[in-house]
Length: 168
Ligand code: ADP
Image (spheres, rainbow, N blue to C red):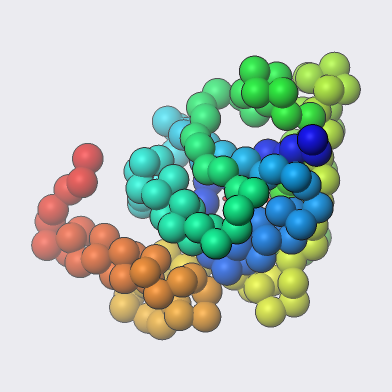
């Protein structure tokens, strides 16, 4: 069985990510989307929320699983027998960063982990989780970037913040 992992922050998942997920799920027998629980970053959505959102957004794709991981991708990959990591490329700026990570992962894993890149579809190239958060924080329209239920969750998060509520 050909399996792969698609690791990322997904804070939150966008149509750009979902398109990569659909295309990777066509290539591999099983695709595991793994949300990075990075204690050094302060995400808008908790890792549990991001996993839940991804499960809902990909529920119609049968060969996709969603889970989370922390620490180094190479360790998580070795423990779960993943030898291929999928990543998306939007622009040359992504490429420089992604190339370095891919080469580092290959080196540190002793050649056991390879990275496969799928290029973003043109209509999603401009979308990033950070720009979506910025737009939503000002109540702007993110309907072309994320599914409606994700947009609602974003507005709700920023409403909570403006009311001074904390979810931590
Ligand atoms: P990171 O994992 O680098 O913190 P993300 O969770 O946003 O960032 O992205 C995970 C992966 O998805 C990365 O490989 C990124 O380049 C890719 N990606 C992000 N946005 C898009 C998009 N709009 N289209 C295609 N790929 C994307």
